Length: 243
Image (tube, rainbow, N blue to C red; front, side):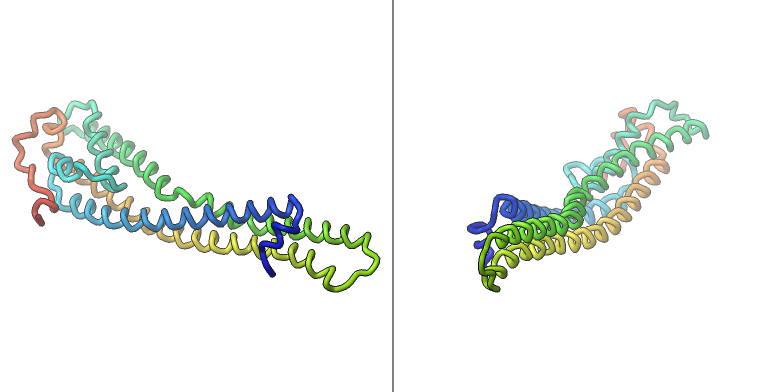
């Protein structure tokens, strides 16, 4: 059946239903494409940041390697460095001081980790909403269309199949349109949900690596105080070496 007939013969409610479903479908595909592009860019940059963290030997070295990087793993590394800078301990290597430093680093890294995970999961609410609501919006359009068709047939003297098939067909298309909007949304939700779980594991591992690096850096206090420029850890980054 020609879908344009819905807009030429349907009433305002049925047309509104189709416009809502069309908007849901367009939004779903737009967000899905945007997330796919962002996923490829994020995965490539994150692999580089993971390698830079693994190659870092100190806080000074890590700060140099993370300069100019904008991926979530680099943001977590910078959050750890920022937490170290904001720590107001004695830097006397005592057990109490180390415990406070550990808690400060964990708090700063965890907060940034939560922010990055929330950014990565952006769009999932849209997929879940469209996947759950679109079938019911389509069903509402179908019920409304059948109701309008039956009212229209009530005043007809001679009811034929052609007279019944047109209005009822337009109403049933609303259900199909709702499913057409919902099925891709559910598919995208499941696909990206799996990729988010895998990437969340990478974020957790990188956060652990940053925390371990900073906690085991004997020159961390000197770097925070600003007299760590003499350290030999100011090594070139992987990008500079490969260049």
